Length: 257
Image 1 (cartoon, rainbow, N blue to C red):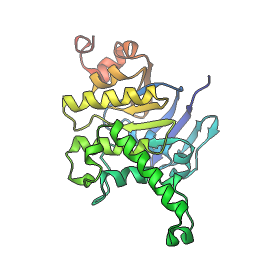
Image 2 (cartoon, rainbow, N blue to C red):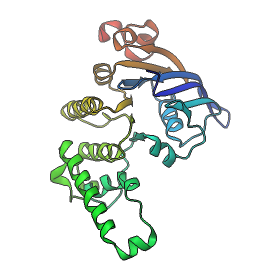
Image 3 (cartoon, helix red, strand yellow):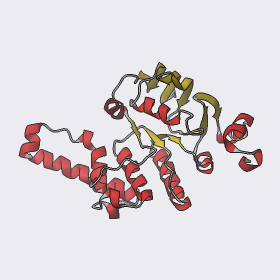
Image 4 (cartoon, rainbow, N blue to C red):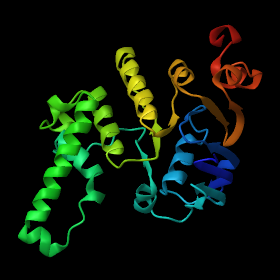
């Protein structure tokens, strides 16, 4: 089976500042792939390019064999790519359930007239989507917070709400930008368990993460960015012993053995 996502010789410059240089990598169906590197290495820039928030200066990005360069983010989301953010993006005042319903919005197409009249068909669709949202919240341990304003929850739960919203779009590829950031060790274990379960349910995962223990324990493969270039790529057991990676990111060899 071919790659689900292919990044081919992608470069990105911002007013002369080079963020990515000829980056090529592939993500295969069913993988959990990690992306590591120091701040400023280009990790979030690569995510933004894949999600359509930025346009590459050069190169191509293909999803299921189709170029997605130039497509707006909503089109890319409809194709099956969803994401979370390095800084949690929570809508002020909206409940946890409403956040998940936002992720389900593409299944709720209705005309202005239908919405105004609130036809029986519309009410049925709304009830069905609400049931789907509650089922997803239950799977992620968030059912008890369905009617709670998401911005009133502790940070760790807000991360889970953001993940639930992303999963509500039924993605084939889930981009997770530092899912462990700001979490305590127990919360990181929970997030790791959720990520594995998501993969078991058929979702391919591409994650950026600074916690080396977390990413090395989750990922099937790891790619390493260094100043916008791909430094190394391969299984965690190989990458964490690469002298260039050890020297640049992971500390002394004894720390990563």
